[in-house]
Image 1 (tube, rainbow, N blue to C red):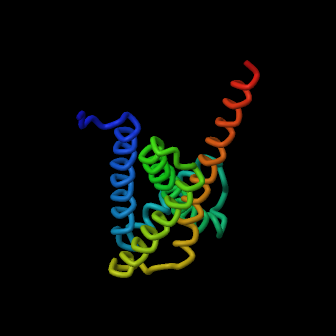
Image 2: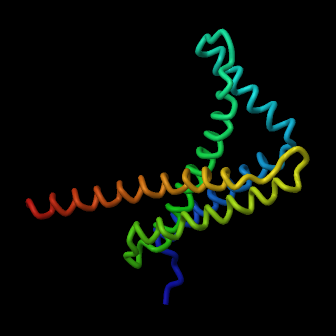
Image 3: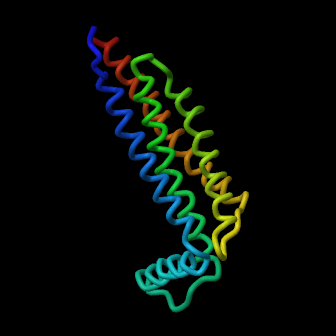
Length: 163
């Protein structure tokens, strides 16, 4: 009996490793002090102001950048977690919807633990709204991939039926 690992399981392992590495990146950002985090956000805001050749910084810009960073970090994490589940269970013909319904809660739990971690970092505090923004990023990623998989399957089925 062969102990070979399927191609899909190998792909799943690569995505899982990438998800863990990305979660570590998120953890490192969360471990920055409040001052360091503000300096990073301020640098991004300054670059945007320079790029757009604005005369002054709009009051809402730094807040928007910080929340967009949360959303984007978890959009990426949601993509990686979803794809790791998708390829892990692809041989079992598990639906993309089930992968979405599994990956989003995993990301929400990580987002919650990430906010709890910030409670112990100088100048940082946990925010429930950040957990919601993080979860929304992961959910959008999973929903878009699920939609793409469904549309691709329907296209393949139509093409197969036309032949």
